[in-house]
Image 1: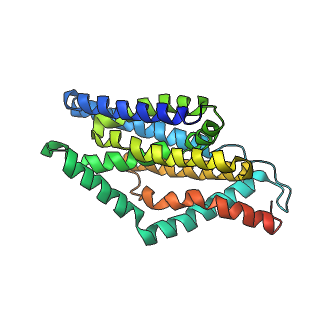
Image 2: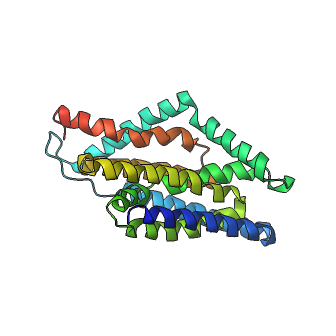
Length: 247
């Protein structure tokens, strides 16, 4: 059943965000801070683990598949970030988060953290390797990867919502739209998407997740939303590398 994994993942994030927000008031600040740090470390691990995915073999001038992956990841992140900065996706997403906050958060004590929870959670659960691969597998009726992802997302979003509030629950909507779009595309063009493209896309997205974790810890202040165009660059770079004989 196509889209089953997407539906399970959506419900897991939505429920986790709501439950976490409900218990937010009852958790002492020191415990919230400790949990937030724990979430950050887990996010960094998820990002690093996804970025280390094994690259597919290459037959071009490069001898190392890892080197090709490294080059495509760098080009994707650099070019994608420039595009994102020019468009200023971060500003648009934060404005959306602020608008939702204005509409749904009436308590002044909850203001400010809504947009942060919405933006951070949206990127964290949408751009990793499991999101990409799971969405494609869901197109052929295999929801197992997205169901496994739903378990991880439930725990991470619950803890994140316990710190930042209900904004995390709203991240289920853009996640569903993103993964659902990937599933739909895969259903239409699954045979035309090279394995290498999926691998490089997932690995690049995982690097963005690392920045989310370091942002949580206060180590960096990267506008991760502005890096998201990097996810689409492998669709252009892989055919280009293949055309000029580098793959």
